[in-house]
Length: 215
Image (cartoon, helix red, strand yellow):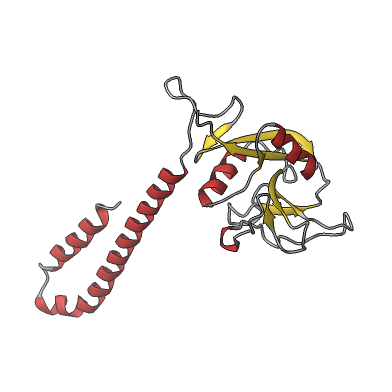
């Protein structure tokens, strides 16, 4: 693609050189506009390709091989220096956290876009239906609307992935509202917006996280 665009532009310029001077002059304005559009499209394609390459390199995760196994326990997946466990046990948010802590970790904290992409990709095929979601370590149980991760750090609004109309603190199912967050499938056109607040005692699967082994 990247070679085709400039060659096409060059070809257009060469072809126009064979026309009569008057014809070239008549088309000069239109030709300049088309050339500018092609240059802009070429630059856009280059930037897009560069962005894809950067995201791929940042977001690629370790796959177990015979020569270089991941530094995580069996059943855990490695990514970005951390290990992730996708529990299929359905329990409350608190019980899910207890399960993670018993395994030496905690409910996952999503720190960046790459981590969200990784988790979303790994969850493909692990959810039986739209409501089949996974708890993550985010809650506003202390103060409504003030979302905190389990390490006490506040949610960075520029790194949040709420689905459309979320969080909504829906009270029709339970008057206590929804103060815990789960990760599921996208509802709209943006595939990374997969966070939903939920009643904390509702049974759900969960994602545990811990650092890779260093010894």
